[in-house]
Amino acid sequence: RGSAGDPAGERTSLNGTLQPKAMYVGDRVKLKSSGRFGEIMYIGTASFAGGDVVVGIKLDEKRSSSDCDGKYQGERYFRCAAGYGVYLSKDEVEVVPPELADEDIRGLTITPTPDPEAFDLEKELDDLVGLKEVKEGLRHMRNFVEVHRRRAAVTGDSTGRAVHAAFLLGGPGSGATAAGRVLGSMLTKLGVVAKGHVVEATRKEILAGCSSGDVEGKLKKLVKAAEGG
Image (cartoon, rainbow, N blue to C red):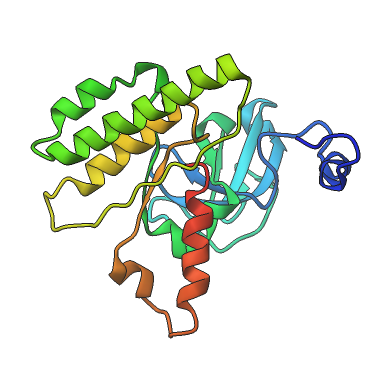
């Protein structure tokens, strides 16, 4: 939030979108039913939907069960190759955030955080087999955040302190991924991060298709995709 005399705050205000919408033409979306991805080509009413609003999507991959090319029941609202078009209602698709829409990111495993209100740290830790030091570290981090908040409430000093964690990924079954997901959920419930999602990337996935000069750019994309989580 910008304060008085803050140029950054002024720019944010000037660039703000009036009456923002949930989705726009050009947005990347994911179909909830199939997990397919595509790009929005049309948002508006259609006679074949009884006048309701539909979302016209050009899919990344062709469907074998349809030859829709943007025309459906005699109505056309966009053009694409046959089999790549589909019309759905708004609640049947979810917008993919720009930082996750990149081709390098779409193939990665991105785990959303569960409902923060239902998250129970002790229950989640009980489900982890072994990892005694990891469990103690997560509890310590939780206690640190809570104590810092109570102290801030008394002293009025709300200066934030950095919280760091690093996981050395072991082989399958090591529990590193599960621990990372617990950490993201815990920090979301504590209000330390906004989303708490976990972006998983192996060394092989990071280096895939990269020359030596491309790795830095790909790492920046990964960091951007993980922001808030």
